[in-house]
Length: 239
Image 1 (cartoon, rainbow, N blue to C red):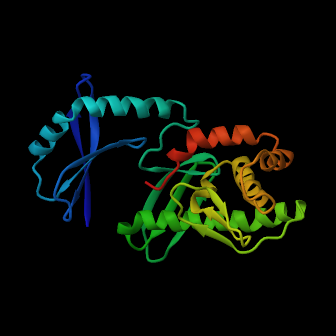
Image 2: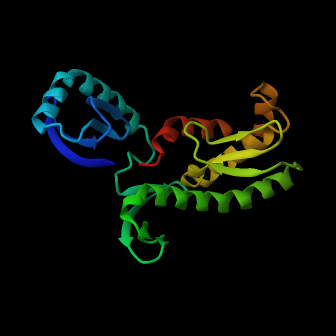
Image 3: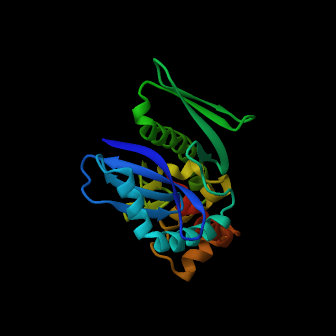
């Protein structure tokens, strides 16, 4: 069982920052992580705040250096860094709220750019978001893959939605297609590129010049799509 809170600390560059504190019964030693989402300290349940602040101070210079690196990366993001109460859907940023209810459903407001999740158990927020993404992605894939398959005169095997850490899509030698459940977070033209990319692997099971030529014939802007994914892809994740 993890417990999350936030503490304010002074860094060596004379700036105060808010650090996420994640306590766990299983953790015995403290650990600091710095990534696109910010700075986190992982500690045991019983670790004193003063001890945590001292640990942060001991690693102050490394934290500042690494945080600046990710700050530069975040400045290149099209939509900026996601906050804890936000998610991406079809390339747009939405505010999210959770409402405890006797049944589970969600309401998306395009005008307000807000998604309300009605849930039975608030402790399963991350799981609820993952399931929501999976459902949205499945709907998109079940629509777009057959359309592109027909247009490209291609047949394929099973189409699956997976919680993949580092891939947006993959294609097996048996012709089965796998797509990341977060695919629906991406802009529509990026989704099209990923689907076409995987379908073309049914013809060319590599990334040769011939493969990229096939992709370009269907998606002339594929290089722009690849650049967008390189800059923004790692930042789209389940919080």
